[in-house]
Image (cartoon, rainbow, N blue to C red):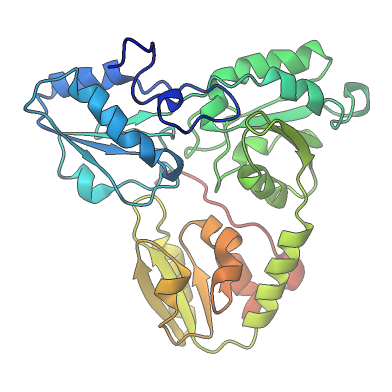
Length: 349
């Protein structure tokens, strides 16, 4: 480990990828080493989300310096966008498997989850967000949500809002969520609270836009401490895209029903229901659902039973309409157009 610099080799400040904020991740190396020793492990798998894959070799080097030479570390090169996106091939071939960047969706002894809490200060951007939130005397309170990376600051966030007169509403959500107030890209059950506005504290618009689409009746304010900006979630452009996709699919005759084989993303029963009701529907199994992989299939439209964000975020990139299961029901005439809603995952897997 790089004791001379004061940081580990896995620290962002030693990698040439210094962010706007001085951020340091805690890779919980001691916990990983303890597991290696307890299991007398000789093979260790490390899986990182896309934005942190470049940290992998440095973290492996740090771990090598703490264990014997007979331990082999293997890095997963599979795409990884969430805790539901485990590299099961590598996991089955290692004695210890470590998944970085996400909190667990399922209790298991097979995987060590390292959430990588951020040390970015959140209160300055929350102070700025007060100008966009409705004042406490004019609202029924505020829902407070964030991602796994900022859950270590959740109590601090709550106290900040309460000290300024807000009644803070929070809940854990369902079994896919580890923490109270946590949201995922596919699950916003924690925002199902008796408040007409929600404050999302976290990076980017990926999560809050999904939240605003599932809860269109709520005023969703985004306080982004990473990019240091406050915005309001606007779903108008997205909804126009979804209505357009449904309309284009209404004349479809041949349907490709996508079933994702990733361990936490498959909805087999839902896919089977569509196949049973539609003689012109064909099951297509895939691990990674991309526009290129579907281009050679002669289908008029697709319905995706895998990760909802494949449809909502990548939908315009597919050569034929890509719908959610709910949108499919509208396109084939089983539901009215006004029933269009956001597709999410609920429950454990």
